Length: 344
Ligand code: AQP
Image (cartoon, rainbow, N blue to C red; front, side, top):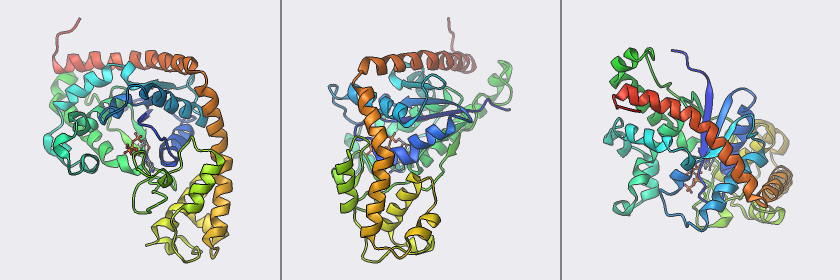
């Protein structure tokens, strides 16, 4: 069955929105607007899978919304909202909790990494995170999901859940007139030169919001001085840059900085190395600082401007939530019929 093409993706309002979120996700979101009808969500229900201070959370939600808009997402043409305003996400997630298998969730590496050694003390929500993510996507029957490399496994699980739902309820889906399959199998869109931006302190670790060191990441709220200082202090190795991408193998920090440059310049590692091959890191870092400040500066300024008017951001989120809910409600009505619930 052919599904109407639709993009869905989300970002958690868990503070410290960074360059990895921008290059791996938000920049892609912007590029997809011309080709698809898009839904971009501030996934606050996901954020509370680890503790969030209630006094800080509203600002973090507005900050992600401001980042979406400052980066160029059009909330009128597309949909921008925060997840907790559309209850259908949680409702479908429950159905998916009953479709997904424990064995599937036990294989999720992100849970293992985030729960760490203190697994007994992790929230049930952190464990069930991938079923909520499947619901986020499938409640809109979205077909394409732009994400960073780290979310690939969760996307595969979303596909497994969609497939199992379609199989388990095949008879009912046909009887209710939905054809052979009710949910599409969503495709991950993991593209570009920076699908996995690494920490500036350790090229083998992902750049992440929760890293204790602020020097590990460039935050979207950093000013030019902070960006310059962080890039200058970024870990490197003693050799000059290679002149071809193959020379970046086994040099994770060099690979990361070249990848960041390429992604910010909408270029490729090969083109960057054609220009900077054999250069010392000091020269390359100066060029990277200039590029990063030129690209991120206007975003930071626009985010600050938007955040000065929180009521305007809330109005955008409320409007987006109302439009999202119309779509989600239709899906949930159908899911209830398919599953066999009696409804009003
Ligand atoms: N380092 C990264 N490189 C490329 N893409 C990344 N993303 C996250 N980190 C990188 C992508 O950003 C989108 C939103 O991510 P998220 O905020 O929902 O969750 P996350 O992946 O858990 O982000 P963090 O920064 O790593 O947070 P913590 O520290 O809380 O775990 C996703 O598409 C993600 O792939």
